[in-house]
Structures are given as C-alpha cells and as structure tokens.
Image 1: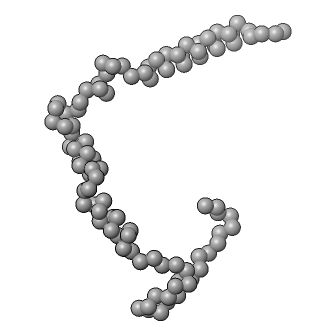
Image 2: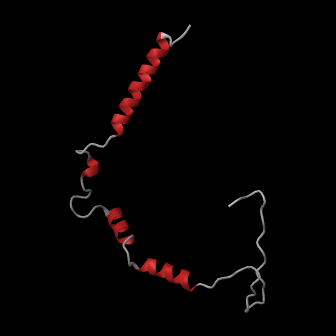
Image 3: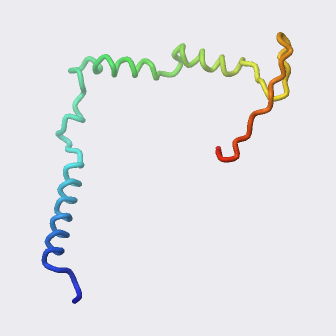
Length: 99
C-alpha cells in the first residue's frame, strides 16, 4: 500500500489551506489602521510623546549615565580600599555555570 489515504490527503489539503489563510491574514494592508497616525495630528498619544522625547540624543539622563560610567572608580580583585583597609576578595568560580 503506497501513497496517502483519502483521509490523509484531505487533512493535508485542509492544513495547507489554513496555513495559506493564516499567512494572508498576517499581511499588512496599505489601508489598515497601522499606517494612520494615532492621536489625530497632535503627534500621538502621551506614551508616544514621552518615548519620542525620552529617546532623543542629548537628553540629560543619557549624559548623567555616561558621566557616571566614565568617572566611576574601577575596582579589581586584590585591590585595597583605603578608607577601610579591606581587600577585595577573588571571585568564586562556579564550574557548572558558563558565561
């Protein structure tokens, strides 16, 4: 007995049609709401306005983070903290964890 049974052929045909319909539904329509500006010309809603301002270059929070990173002291194992005399210990090795 070779080939598919009629039931199997029908099932495969149905699955193929479902996949095609699903893919067609995933396509974006040029007339869809995704292309229309939200908020009616005011630049979007409050969340959109917040993120557009928040992610601009030159905003203060980005400068603060960069300065903190650039000017922070580097501490390595074996270093001695002058104020307390504490020596930074070696890091533990975890053999079962890789990174």
